[in-house]
Image 1 (cartoon, each protein chain N blue to C red):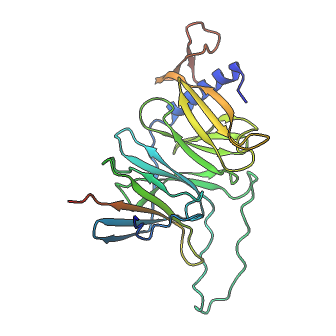
Image 2 (image 1 turned 90 degrees about the horizontal axis):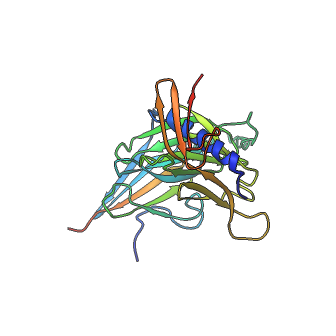
Image 3 (image 1 turned 180 degrees about the horizontal axis):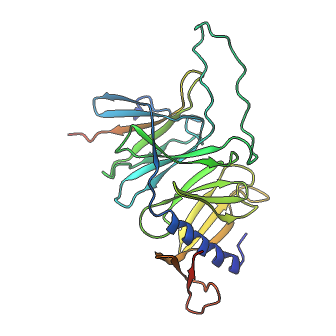
Length: 55
Length: 237
């Protein structure tokens, strides 16, 4: 099991209900993208999780 | 549905013009709230979006890095937290799909500058539902496209242009897939009947496009403006 460290990836959390894996920094390791849709007192937010390479 | 040949060639020229016009993209910066959390082996960023997040997609830059393009709905005022003593009010009205209604915005977020959301445009019609990115001119820097019912818009900080008109676009919901093959842009979406995907449109892309002074040059696989070599020159007004 892989922890998402708070990035919301369940149904309905991403805009279209799907989490996305994208290599944003070009290091060959994908980052995890999710969405927090916000609440009445908080803006929605784009979430990005970097898993650092093990030494 | 496949576009007529003449229409496809005309659209190819239109795409090329729009690409040339938007080549020097210099978006306006907009401050973004960013929260960062780190733990052993991981880091999480949360980038505030100033409105409702309608759609987003990663986009490739010419240097090999990636950014994210976001389609954002109107900004609605935040309500105070419960128990703060402020009186509760009714939520804002939903956006109208008409052109005269609230406008959507397109932002670009670059991981190298996480505290900036760059505003590309704030005049996107309020019925837009999908954003996609494609390298239409082969320079490895992907262009941003927004789909709304009946139209596909090419958007940059400088311009917003319709590059495709098709009543089949966004039929039945916000689903749109695209593909580039053999110099053609193909768009797929829900079919008129049944389930699955159907080809909605096919656009011949230019092989080469360039601007020389006051003229632009477009070279396509299919002839445009009646020339036989597939090359056309035209002086801009």
